[in-house]
Image 1 (cartoon, rainbow, N blue to C red):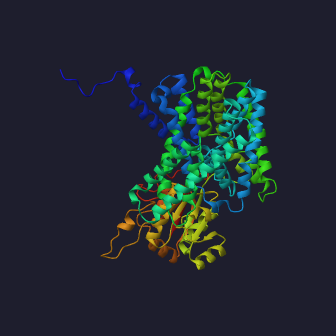
Image 2 (cartoon, helix red, strand yellow):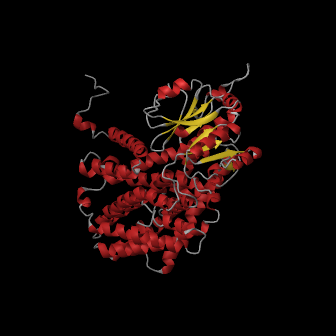
Image 3 (cartoon, rainbow, N blue to C red):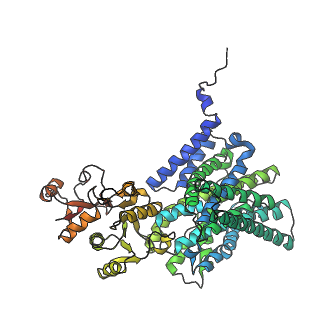
Length: 608
């Protein structure tokens, strides 16, 4: 009989099928990231807990059996891509005047952190001095995998955000360099002279930077001469990063971790080349890779290694959080223009991420193979510190930033594109309800009138590439495109969807298009349709010119939604303010706009 091509797997065989396991890991990574966004729980914490459950607890996932010898190379490549994406976000303009702080954090601050973690490892564990020094080198890294989500969630005032982002990306290759040198010189015995160490450090820096620069400018030439088809731009960008990572690593161990962020920085800071498409694609890959990597690496920790996590890990964690980070921040920010509040906040944020986990896994395997006593403690100690710092900083950064007055409790503010009469009326109504409002316009007269009305304004083009560096978005959580130009509204919504997300990006309904003119440019909108399908700029402006005003009405047992509707038949509901001070923007296409309004809510409506 012919052998059937497909067969139904047994229940026990399903979980041993590599395709099922791979699919499960990817789906888990996506689902956990969604849960993190919805719940506010740090995503990395969810990844780690899931990996622990799937690996040592339930025994469902064994990454070493699943991937074999490919595991660690694949982890290294993934980290290289993540750092490339981080480099693409490093724009020199955002750290203007604060480069010295970043330089000190990744040099003096790293040395302070290394020293504190080394002493803590000696005091709280039985590691040898060599292993304690290696552990300290591993723990100096932070990484964009944890800092990025934190900054997106908290949105601290400038310049804290850019400083922490730059530090997190630049400190990774520096920490890896320290770990590699320590590993070679102190543990493997590759050489002990100062000249040998200096040569290794210099070669690492030279190769990493040179490879990144050469490939970066080579890719810029290719893009400027249009050698790369538009549909392949993202793939060519990531492919170049992989080539740079492998090339640098083949010349000097781990130099690829410096080459990829260097490549990204070169592309990000060349004004005549747009990297937005590459960045968006890389961001998608990054989110997926971070989830997969943390699940896989945490699943590798055996139950016997979990038993090694005890008072030693707690002592190291306490030393890093209470002594290492505050001391490093204090020393690195002395004599700078930063206020004491900024310095305190920088001193309370330093979570560890995927680079620490990956290099700890690599070195632990090699050291255990060499039979070095205590090497088995490296991985569980590092993962314990990762979990601890993610929990402490993930849950603590927002309250600290708010207590220092450097972040808003909620991002309920509104960015309004346009500053004409209609935009000013809507902005003033929101300000009256104590919501932060920023009006952005290229019309100098409108901007002046808005300022005279007491509104915060920004004069400039919101469609430029670095618009997020020009605007102060502290406390701002959504954008309303309200200009009379439908195409500008669509372009602005498209531009800000990457910052606020499409769920918080809104634009007015397009106006009437003259007969014979193609309206497709305005019907495929980038933002959610504001208020109702008939609420075009022309119609709302006509109502305002005719004397309509925005009034707020509280819904009570004595005055219900039905009463409001009966009295205000021609009202255009704009916003609803919930009792917890959450702002709800009314949108078209959601059915009856009044259906979600309940007792205790306040309706902001345009009343004739």
